[in-house]
Amino acid sequence: MTLVNPTLLNSSFTPHLTFPKPLKPVAPILLQRRIIFPRYNAITANVKVSERKSANYQPNLWTYDFLQSLKHAYADIRYEDRAKMLQEEVRRMIKDESSDIWLKLELINDVKRLGLSYHYDKEIGEALLRCHSSAGFSSTFVNRSLHETALCFRLLREYGHDVSAGITNVI
Image 1 (cartoon, rainbow, N blue to C red):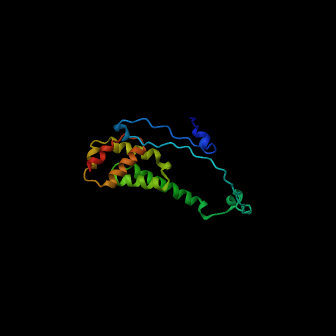
Image 2 (image 1 turned 90 degrees about the vertical axis):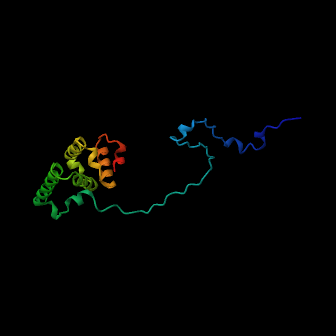
Image 3 (image 1 turned 135 degrees about the horizontal axis):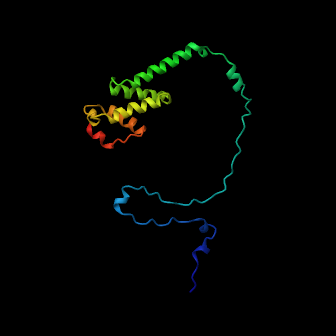
């Protein structure tokens, strides 16, 4: 009686297949914390790649020098002065210690969403430090909405302050 090697039966297909290694058993506690993805090897195939068609666009007429040569009405010194005045006004609003902390957090959030927070990084950091280090920091969250608590939590975490995730249990 002769034995036939299974790889010789269909030798054109078998060498391309590789089966995944069996996974080691994992303790039930670790299964809750880890996502396990099985590994498979794919079979390669010859695919004809079509060339990308060119649209033959004309070069852009709007060069950098042309854009810089355009005049606009907002380059005047009065607009620059007004912009500086408004920046100082926002800076004073952030530094104001007598204002409500929740209004200040909303202001900081709005400034960040507008993309202007780089102008006020120092002031925002100081305001959040005062908020975090104030006596009764945890008690300020009592009777507050989820929005206000989440906003404070996010801003304090973004600026590197240690805030426990258990702070949401207060509301």
